[in-house]
Length: 364
Image (cartoon, rainbow, N blue to C red):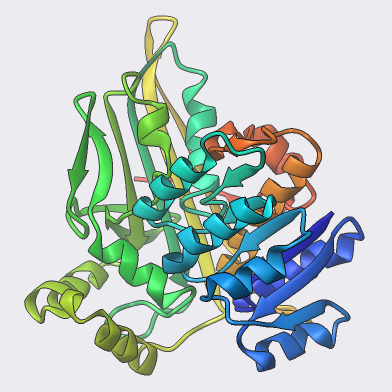
């Protein structure tokens, strides 16, 4: 299968190496940064320098390809998806942006090819888990989805390190969040809905952020009483971010905020991803709660270290493509994450990354 992968950042590099190693994919990685591509060229992976923000350049690199994997910043998603439709190739991405996903859904109407956005961790795997648990209930009451990509060793006042895209982080902190309350679809404010819980003896906080629900609000409309998604952080993080975004008004000066975060908040490869889903409702007349809780840790091997967010995000994108290639997903039109069966995901050669995680037994 001929694949063009757009973006040679941390996630793109991991995806390219994993897919190329299987022998089932002919991967060409496209980026505007020759230095980033050079690292992949050393591994024998085909690369190409191009302006990934230019529609004409994208049309050229997508011509004759079976599928495009978009690992670029979220604001380029619609441009890439549009060119994918023009080129007649299947489309997969990692976007958390709600508006971009809605636009891609419209592009997919009547298309001969498949469009599957949101193939990462959240949105992505978290929605697959929630939908799987929900199927076992006769009557759904509440679905709570919580995800955290956290430093293993927090040391600064924010209790946070940069583990993934700064663009994506700011996007989810600044845009309205979808939810269902009392059976009605609503929008709630980011950084609101603060809650605290402990897991494995560690204290956490969680609050509303945008995009993590994917398309579940639409899929479960009329079937669930309460549905929401919150990002997990260490206690105190949300209040400091609220000061930056609200009181200092940096949500209206996003480029300056990005510069501040990149300059002042160190990145780390030593992270942990927390996945926590609870579903409650009736089963054969009895009120029941089902829980899925996992921690995924970084791979700290000296030869090829990978952060937990690299592992979980790349696993989502690679598994979606793999299941599509095997015919386990629809082959045209808009494909939702919740159309992936959780057992199929976890049995996949890439999805097994989540099986190798540690199940969490205690929570309060």
